[in-house]
Amino acid sequence: MILFIIGLLSGLISGMGIGGGTVLIPALTLFVGMSQHNAQSINLIYFIPTAIAALVIHIRNKRIRKELLWFLIGGGVIGAVIGSFVAVSLDAVFLRRLFGVFLFYMGIKEIRKNKRKIKVNRE
Amino acid sequence: MKSCQKGESKYKKLMEEILLIKHKFKIILVGFITGLTNGLFGAGGGTIVVPAMERILKVEEHESHATAIAVILPLSIMSTFIYTRHQILDWKSIIYVAIGGVGGGILGAKLLCKISPQWLHKIFGLFMIAASIRMILG
Image (cartoon, rainbow over all chains, first blue to last red; front, side, top):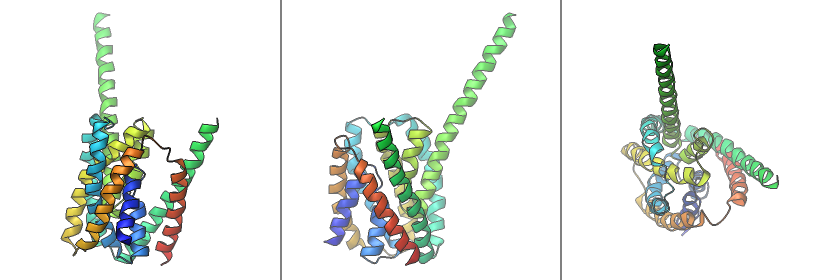
């Protein structure tokens, strides 16, 4: 049940395009006690049906910029292969700490983004 | 005189082509960094590609969110193959998380154009920082 709730909340956030994975992975390692590699692979697999569901709606609303898509995916696939091989070769605790550093940076950015947006709105 | 003008327009064309190639290279580089992050951390591709699209490629906010999902989907499939070749997966957990995820994904995409996610940014920013400290120290 806790897994279902974690999935639902993360899906809600990633469907809105904020980045559900940055919530799902810490939730799985901290609340369910999963290893970092397992949590990361769950997030990757979980993203596939979630993204397809969200994409159907985005395609209907014509929000996808197709002319950018192929170049982004082209560069992205090369990066994804390198990044994944590095990840599977790393020690789980080291990978979790590295993820923690990344998450900390993202969290700060997230809060700052909020401040900037409010400022713009007030102006 | 005429040939000089011709030369100038040729030069202009060349410059335009160089700029276009530079622009394409930028897009590919954004994709590469997105894939690298998404592969290494199994997440976070969106947090790279969305602001990059908005700032560098000048894409509108909602469009960049939607395009980001279309970009990260094939990257995640790629990374999934590499991850699953190296470990045994807990399929039961995946199914529970995925069922919840599909429901949440549909709801989130529908809500995207209706609510302003401003307060969400703050809540999740705080959650991320708290979780990151526990992950680094734990």
